[in-house]
Length: 283
Image 1 (spheres, rainbow, N blue to C red):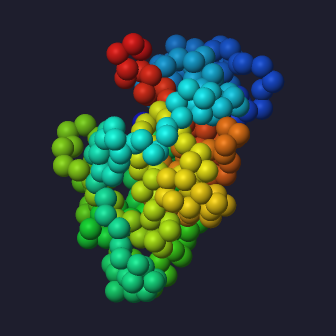
Image 2 (cartoon, rainbow, N blue to C red):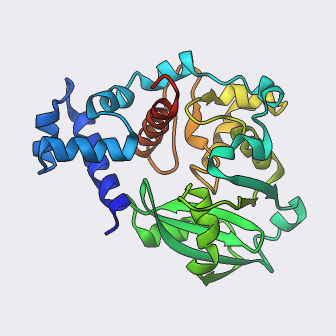
């Protein structure tokens, strides 16, 4: 087990405890539940998110999404003007992207070779898939298992040929994860229907530490009445986290759904907010 996987396991167990608690948990209490000393537990948290367990609990509180929506809501209509669109939005993850043509998408992956491999991410064991043009799929195995994660992605392009080749993907994965020493960008290859691509393009405009709403995305792509369809397209995003569908909330500030579970969505929002705060000059 790598250090990242161990860290995620600690965080995942802590999230479950925090969710079940009626009041905030103390450092000593959380550390005891993790079978760790308070100092060690504090250090693990700080290494993972850059802030204390107490601060992290505040980010994980049920009202955190609503606070983000109030304080860090991104108006996508102005994103292009401030340089947040397209490949520029994900400069912090070193990503660029292009989309498959509608005609090729309609073939269900026929004639397409997709390479795959397992890697460690801040959110546990992660399945990455990619074509010769870039990363096209990402799935988490922490909750549902590796076989289910593989089936989930493979069923999206049933006629493709799948080849296990993690070494081929590793440079792109390292760049996408921001691994130290990586310099070249990691390309994304978006495989989806035209409407889905529009929604995913809008998600790529949402900066780290900020959120948007399904209705705002619908407005941005020129389909203001298609909020339900937008939600479906968000849920069908095959490159979760890198295309940040976890940053899309309901207008009320509720989390809404998430393909990989609301616990992971909350963890991602908290992790990103904490990292963003820790990296800011005022932090």
